[in-house]
Length: 454
Image (tube, rainbow, N blue to C red; front, side, top):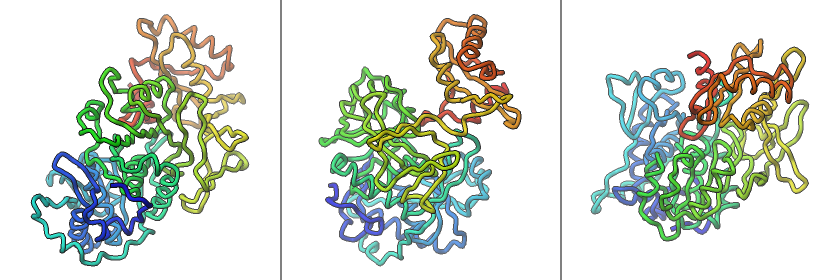
């Protein structure tokens, strides 16, 4: 059952909520009392450990939340790392002292200390929940939560958040979407180690009193295997999943869909809304900024509304974000924004995507749009190749089916020169069957750069 008011993080595991369902899964529902019992047991293990930085790699939502709460109650800091193999974590050891995971890594591969975040098995009253009613330690909302940017514009960077900021962001979103998500289960295809997945797939449902599906939705087929829910599900997803949906199949019962990470094309948005039978709300933000705005997707002219308390001011060379959910209250943005009289806005590229070649300014965003508009081009991405001190423009191009590079390259170059100037013509082209994306539909810069090294 959904709470009729916002739930503070310190009240999530309150004894008065011990019979409320927090998670659903194949093995049955999990109540707040069971999560509290597992948290109490894990706190003791963490308090006996001297290190202060705890990496959380759990994919199972119940284990992830248990781990995050235990870390906070134990007075540690949480480092949210993607769920990767032990070799990846061995390379990231400088960021953590201990790993909490839902499935232990093979001891012979793991060059780090690890603990398992386990949900107690409490079928048929086998758990004594009275043990969990002992007082929990103080929950410090200044607990640090560290995330990594995706690396779409370069090397991934580490970003510091706090539980206080995450709670406040959820409070704001609850004020906007509370009536639309009330009494509905949450399912998600986005890992909680990414800020969008953490905000909409973990903190918002927790603070709304909603039940969360434990399993990550890894593909479109998994959507059809979910048990029906009479009030409809809330789906937290991204274009990466939407592109893999077979729209000929019957949709689950959806009441509310959010999309993030990258912008939806209008064609894909229309297909998803027709298939699901409900609207899509898109959020706009980044790991550094948190959510800056939201919009109900109607058509390609739909604009974003800033979150309450969020405002933008033009600085000397770019916009400055003022927000109640970021450290210091403000952040210099690389985003180019177009504002309207009613306070709404639309993103229109990035300030750092304008380069100068022999005194001519070249907009990487405009060049990308030009390429995508050509009849013979199915898709394209443009980037500045290293070393960036001597700008070299590279273009990754997907041609329409049946066309060849030799038939099109000269025509493409001529039209770019005519429309944007000679200096805007990419010096290097790579033609591929499709542009590589990660599971969220993001195109990572290092993967694009790698295409030019092959």
